[in-house]
Amino acid sequence: MVDEGNLQNLLQELQLVRSQIQTLTSQSNEISVTIEALKSQSPDRSVYRAIGGILLEVENREELDSDLVNSKNAIEEHLARLQSRENEIKNEYSEALKSLEN
Image 1 (cartoon, one colour):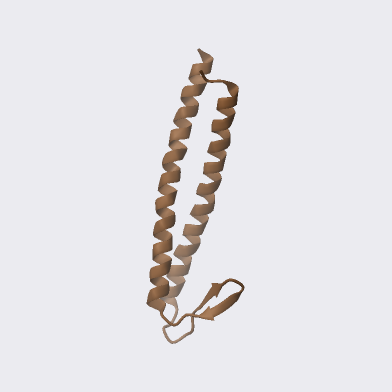
Image 2 (cartoon, one colour):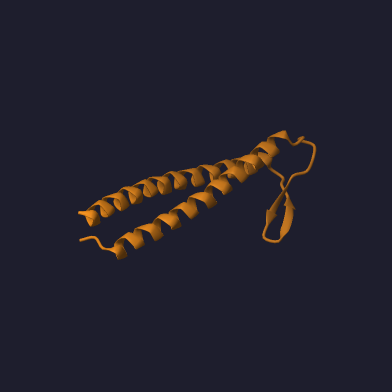
């Protein structure tokens, strides 16, 4: 049996998932911009990476690029799962709403 409490829980979960999607989308976009900036940076110029509160010079650009690509891929995989969950919640909410109306 569906009640208003269940609907409220679904809405709260939907809001949480959407917030996470927005955060991860921003992170993915930021990493994409960083990857492109790294590619356009002249090889003879230094590149730095923020670690904690300091900047350290990167000695191996290929490793940095690989780390960034791996991070972006992981974020995109997580985004896909969240988007799938968002659709599931929307469907559950629609079904719960129909159940309440009957």
